[in-house]
Image (cartoon, rainbow, N blue to C red; front, side, top):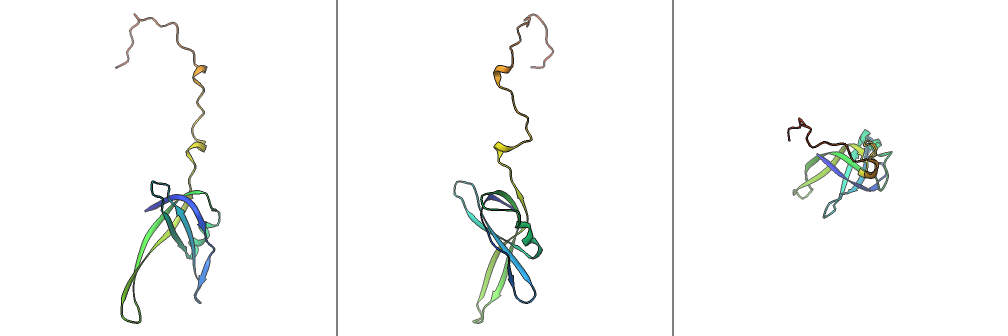
Length: 125
């Protein structure tokens, strides 16, 4: 699955416990009729993927949904969901797409003046 949007916040890497578990959070705001602020967590070695990203950038994040069950000390079962990112890439704005060649203005084209209506063309339409 993927989430696309503009980066609202990139958190610092946090370490937990003695085993060196690392987590880093990013919040992406979707650009749709009802924008959503989606928090995605990157864990362990994936934390470093966020080093080159900053607020305001448009990104696409590849995610996995994770769910887990926990029984509290009172014996009640609780369920938790998380969104884990495993890849992130910057998106280029459509207006800054350098892959398309520039189109010359219409007045750069001259109309064909030597057309003969009696000439047969072989166009199928």
